[in-house]
Image 1: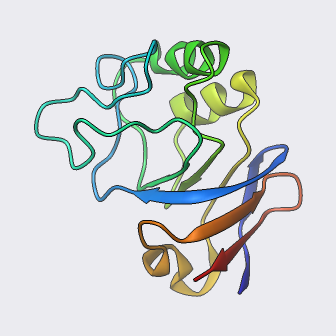
Image 2 (image 1 turned 45 degrees about the vertical axis):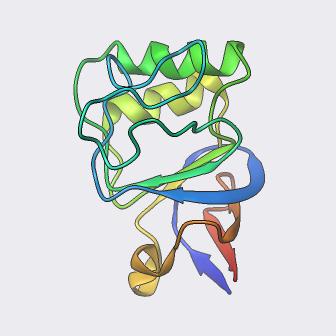
Length: 133
């Protein structure tokens, strides 16, 4: 199922969805050396985001979070793509500088249909996501 979305950061990627109900603060919330979520009590605590299509409602926290995304990319621990319910500037800047394809505002309530483990393709240039169950 192909869904239109708002294009945020250019590029394409496909991978397994990792879905969080919680907003993510990359600064202090994700280890930039390993890609493991270290934020205590977070829905993804202890999980590695490397190579996943990371699906979360929005970012939060310090502007340094943008640079944590860049560091994750340099350490080959970044998500392969990001889907937000509604993007905010910290995550947008991070995705752009780290060259992580990103979209948000999926049409037709499709954001809620993405489940852990689904194969998802993201086209941040065209502004689409494709869900493969």
